[in-house]
Amino acid sequence: QVQLVESGGGLVQAGESLRLSCAASGSIDRVYGMGWYRQAPGKERELVATITSDLRTDYADSVKGRFTVSRDNEKKTAFLQMNNVEPEDTAVYYCNAGVRTRGAPAVSAYWGQGTQVTVSS
Image (cartoon, rainbow, N blue to C red; front, side):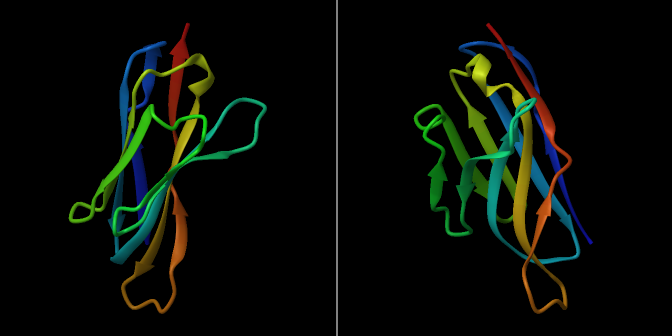
């Protein structure tokens, strides 16, 4: 079994910074791509940023230049540095990872429980 645990959410003011973490644990053979998604009230979940195991990154247009995704492969942890946040960034942020568990032939997708980010104006 695999667990993804996000942390680092909270209440911040517009223009401030926040850093989210996502730690994977369990019976893991390898962690492949990791990503951050968010879901605001009344809206669908959307992609924020992704990072491959060889550190290639991709971002939603709305966060380019403000957010940075990174990871520590040894610690099986991904990070989302959020700078110059805006009220529109308010959402529950979810971590996603492709994981091959020990003894499993295929890669499965796992989700964290989410962490709330609230940006006040």
